[in-house]
Amino acid sequence: MEQALAELNVKIDALTAQVAYLAEQAQLAARQREDRSELMRDLTPIADQAYHLAIEQLEEVQEYIDLGDLLRLLKRLMRNGRNLETLLDQFESIMDLTQTIGPLTDEAFGKAVTTFADMEQKGYFAFARGGKRIADNVVTSFTAEDIDRLGDNIVLILNTVKDMTQPEIMNFVRNTLLVAEKEVEKPVDISYRALIKQLRDPEVRRGLALTMRVMHVVGSQASDSQASGSQVSGAQVSGAQASTNSSATG
Image 1 (tube, one colour):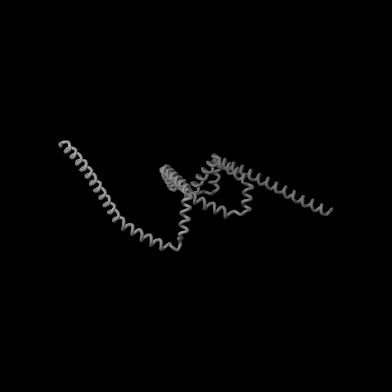
Image 2: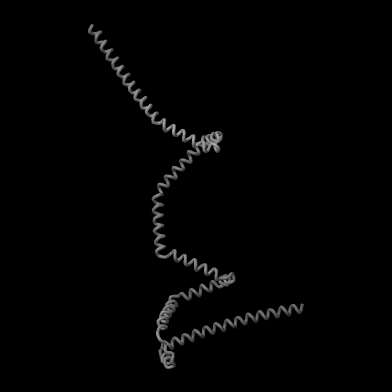
């Protein structure tokens, strides 16, 4: 009798546990249904609003959209799925590269801005603008014939400039200009007595001697140029006479 009672108690305990489990599951299902119902209540106004908005937007473009076009576009997207995936991979690679070199480009841009600001402060851009204006004046002041002659004599011009830019010559010219600028501001005595007094100065006599030597060189160069021109003219005249005689003989 006691054994049967014990077995009955065990069965009652098992049944109680099962009922408790079922009750717990029922409560859990009820909570889930309640959560879903609450979610649906929250989403329903949003879905309705999205639906009406989609309808309004589609009504604006319904003239330009055809169901066949949408289906064809969908098919193309499905056929090019791998290409789109490859394109997305490349895009991700580009984004990674951009994130990597972004700080470097920012630093380079900052340095460039600083450099340009320094150049502007030092006057490089103003000098460039002035150089452009000078170039425009030079270009508009020379004809095509002048450019041709300049091209024929460019080597001689450069050699002359090179000789004139020697340090000794540049210092001589600069010192002469500085002294002359100071002397021009002083009063000048042009009487014969003052001139004769200046001739007693060794530096004045040396300057006159050098001036006479330079004048001698200039005169020699002028004589050589005239002689060369006469020879060229004589040759041209002789050639013309020869051509005339040949024509007459013929």
